[in-house]
Length: 172
Image (cartoon, rainbow, N blue to C red):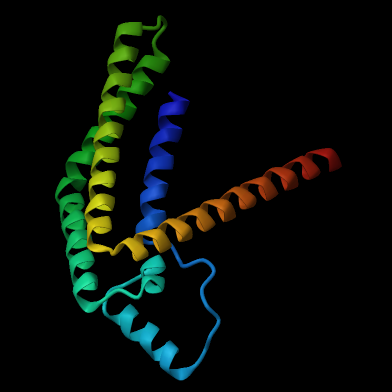
C-alpha cells in the first residue's frame, strides 16, 4: 500500500513540476527589454518553466486552453473524488478496527486505489503529451533539461534533509 501511495505522490508531483513549479536556473539578466518581455509573458498566462521556453502567443494560448480544460475537469470531479476518498478512508478504518482481517476486502480496496491511481497517471500523461505537442523540438529539449535540473535539485534537497535528520538523531 505504501508503494502505491508513494507512486501516486510521485506521479502527482511530476505533473506539478512540469506545469506549475517555479523556474530553476533562471537567467539573472536584468536588462529592461528582457525583464519586460518576461513580465509580458507571465501576464499572458505562462508560468514556471514555460517562461524560459520563449513561447509564442499562440503556444501560450494553446497551453492555457489545455490547462483550463484540465482544471475544469478537476473541478467537475472534485465532489465525487472527495466522497470516494472519504468512503475509502472509512473502509480502511473499518478493516483496521476489525478483530479479523478480511483479506478479500483489503484486496478489493487496494484494487480500487490502484484503479484511481492509474486513471490519475493516464490523465497526467495525456495533459503532458498535449502540451508537448504544442512545443517545438527545441522547446521540448529545453523542458526536459529544466525537468532534469529540478529533479536533481529535489534529490539534493532530500539528501540534505536526510543528513540533517541523522545529525539531529546523533545529537540526542
